[in-house]
Amino acid sequence: MGCDENNCRNMKRNLTYLSQQHAAELDQDLFNDYKFSVDQLMELAGLSVATAVAKVFPASSYNSTLIVCGPGNNGGDGLVAARHMTGFGYSVAVYYPKRTPKPLYENLLCQCEKFGVKIIETLPPINEIKDQYKLVVDALFGFSFKPPVRDVLKPALDALIHSGVPVCSVDIPSGWDVEKGPGTEAALKPELLISLSAPKQCAKPEFIGDAKHYLGGRFLPPGIIQKYNLTLPPYPDQEQVVEL
Amino acid sequence: MGCDENNCRNMKRNLTYLSQQHAAELDQDLFNDYKFSVDQLMELAGLSVATAVAKVFPASSYNSTLIVCGPGNNGGDGLVAARHMTGFGYSVAVYYPKRTPKPLYENLLCQCEKFGVKIIETLPPINEIKDQYKLVVDALFGFSFKPPVRDVLKPALDALIHSGVPVCSVDIPSGWDVEKGPGTEAALKPELLISLSAPKQCAKPEFIGDAKHYLGGRFLPPGIIQKYNLTLPPYPDQEQVVEL
Image (cartoon, rainbow over all chains, first blue to last red; front, side):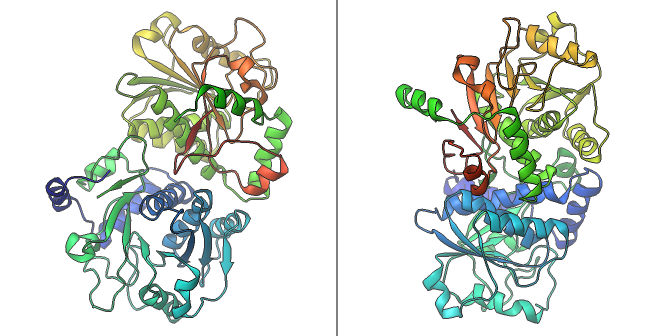
């Protein structure tokens, strides 16, 4: 996959990068106008996250993975990705400090456990994370994020930033402004970003630098692409992700 | 994909082929013990159907497809496949003569319509089907099927059998005994069978002959594989289907 350097630069320049408000509206449209259930879209989103991770950091070299899940849909995508990653050959642990008391999330967690995902109740000390895990998936905050970070989630964000383990961020690098990007030098620097449905403004090349960037969540109806005037690359064949 | 001829024959001989009762029990286990929603599994099943169809009958040569959907979960898989196939480049029509009055099915149908699937209310005369469609997907009956075929669905089954257009069957070739296969010479002869989760007994090589055979529905937990003592081939990489 991928593209040659010139084409690639042109493609990225012309891509649509959504504002926070448009991302939220588009999401609501999928549920209200297109009658998708959260279950459906989260399944496809999480599958695409697992797929992109496996393409960039194959299980053969990055077997042991920690997935840090937040309380919202981003965390749910992480739970689905965790399950699919067990099928792709990874040994997966999930840290999910603030759980969402909804049946869907409880069921996703149950599925994780029964697929052999280890649910850890406390994070290892930051300097020991890299002894236990070769890869971290950041499913902490998504496109709804507004600062400040809640106290209960600060240790998780610190671990993502300081562990020294490669980080794959789901949709938004956690802690970043959804539109203005990392903001400070101290922000998280993921090695891989998987944008879901369409990139958000913080995924522009000037913000993500040389991080690998994939698009997943192959479920946008033509009416949405038209309504939001989206310019997105085609997915190859029956792939669930495309490299940007 | 595929395998060399000897390996292939050995692999198929050793595969598990489920009885109708075990197929039903396994399905219930996924919902009761593993807390999957129908939405989740139908999404993955339908995606795998669309993927297998696109691998065997690419949209570039088989653009115009008719999907015949029955009233149960098999029909739901067909509705999901229809939506994904529009994304894979097909022009898709759905014939869905006996609709299930449940929100999930109504929503799947709504999604189909909004993705550009044409919902047809009457079948063309059998001898005209091949003028309009290059491929038919049979999502009429699944592993719960017990004869006789209801009158309202007979014309759909007749069309599948007699249209002269290549047929891709979802899980079970419609009208077949789930365990004993086609039964009569007059039965449906699909060119492609996509078994979901695990093949059923009617998918044995002596029944399906030289039809292409894929396995999809990549969602079986290790506990189910153990409980039913399933021997199934591994899925390659992040693929949603594997050729048997």
